[in-house]
Length: 101
Image 1 (cartoon, helix red, strand yellow):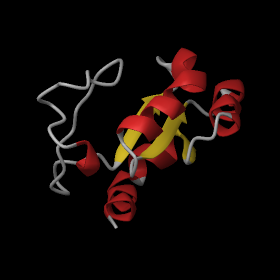
Image 2 (spheres, rainbow, N blue to C red):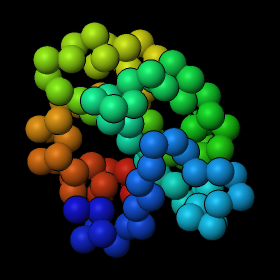
Image 3 (cartoon, rainbow, N blue to C red):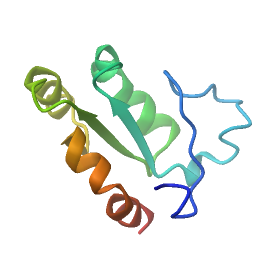
Image 4 (cartoon, helix red, strand yellow):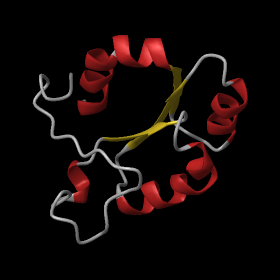
């Protein structure tokens, strides 16, 4: 979906290093998405790093609908948007449009 919208996507378990060629211009990073199925332990710490490194980026979390504790933890940590998996994946093109604005 992101590539169809003309976006570059970097996938990884953590944010890329500051000097990474994958992120040549931090001001172009529009969203950082956290998969709560695999990365729920970084919920409390990632927000500050994203704000510092990628000032305009939305911080987004998504996870299984039955993982209410993880979804609520992301909300409590100040994530901009929190989704269950289905709305996130089915609405990704629309979200990309919103984040690009």
